[in-house]
Image 1: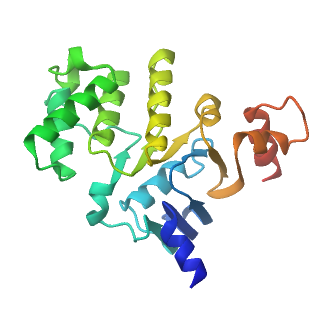
Image 2: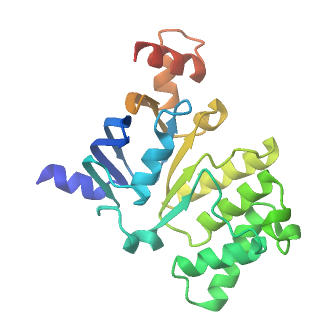
Length: 248
């Protein structure tokens, strides 16, 4: 009973999750417990299982073994209004404008009030720095701009849990810094962010990190804890990552 109670308070609880594509095992008994109001980073090389894990959390895939609970419930479409999802590959409608795309996703997330939806769409587009390009079809935008539209679509309905797969890829340093400032504000407002990345700059902004290798968690802790565990006073997060993955 006590363990179940703690699980219900977690933003994400994954227990012994296994998933394979055919004969290729991607996740191997992975377990995570993510408390609310944190920026939680999933750090790993390409192929470590980050994207597959996020797709399992959002309910696009089902684990072949183990269990997942999101905000106390199994992943399902009924949680869509409580979860914002930004995929690694943009899922935008190329012929629609940036604003029309964000508007579409706001409707899909259940934002029925027109005036509230319009205000939320405008705020999201302003946040990602695309107000001047809001009327441009997505197909005319650069890759980095498309990434911004995708992030705006994930943020538009103010969900308590955001699952962001490589959200800062293709962004210039100034815009990336503004995103992290906003992510910090969101956690202070009670939002939980789960962010996958392979960059140490993103990792340094997280409250807590897991290092993934071959579908397994090889280390977990705050950035400071992970650096300290290397035993070297001037260790970087990159040093810490290499330390743990080599131990594997």
